[in-house]
Length: 116
Image 1 (tube, helix red, strand yellow):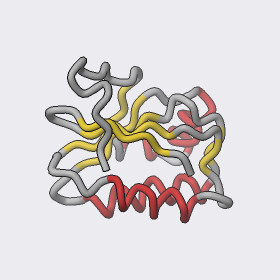
Image 2 (spheres, one colour):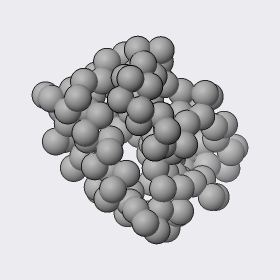
Image 3 (spheres, helix red, strand yellow):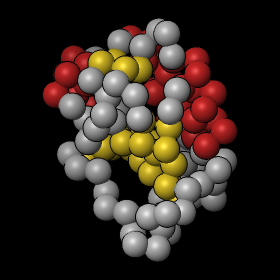
Image 4 (tube, one colour):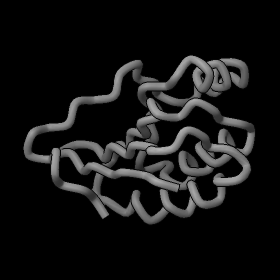
């Protein structure tokens, strides 16, 4: 599971560099996120712009990460593809998460600064 963290001043942006979050990778996704989110920020933004497929196991993994961060920190989602967005809408999870249509721009200073 390839996740690329970028620590910003007020949030941690984690890009999912995979086309799928499904049953085959859900546990690895959760484990990798557990290691990455050990940062002193209150917001973690998950960049899903490269994810084309998310099944119920993948959705469960994203929800598990949200619960792992709560209540001190929140997980926000950004850049969802239409297919992934539909999964969140059909399950009404779009009302649980803060969603951003676009992925936040990285600051110039943080562009090369990876967390972890």
